[in-house]
Length: 167
Image (spheres, rainbow, N blue to C red):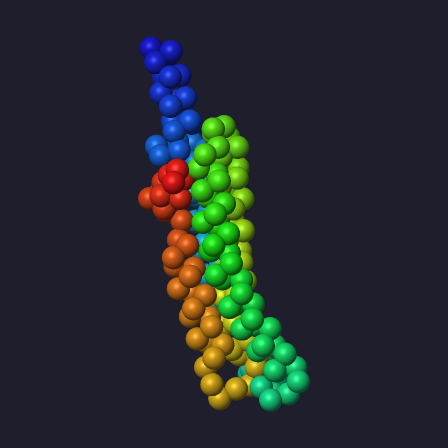
């Protein structure tokens, strides 16, 4: 009886699609970071609101305002497509790894980096929406683009299976 339980435990730990202990933990950590990004965005909105309320603003037409908006948009336009392409390429490499422990470690690291890059874009544009005095909603649109990408990156069991299926 005890030997049968050990065999079942080993199957759960080695099969990435059964989401045994290790894969389940990875999914929990990725979800924790995913929702922490939204919490951070709310925090940035509160901080930005108080900056605006107490007159701490940067003029959109000033050198600093132009530099902030340019840097923000360049970061968004360069980093989001690149991180998605990098993640796709990296998961194809990870899918062929035979060692299950190494596969888990590499996937977790890659997915965490992707969520962090998208989260930084999302939170930064929300903060800049309040900080940079502008008549347009360009930072809000940029935050919306990052939010859509963040939604696409929602960690789920199905996406983990699809990501780690060999090409």
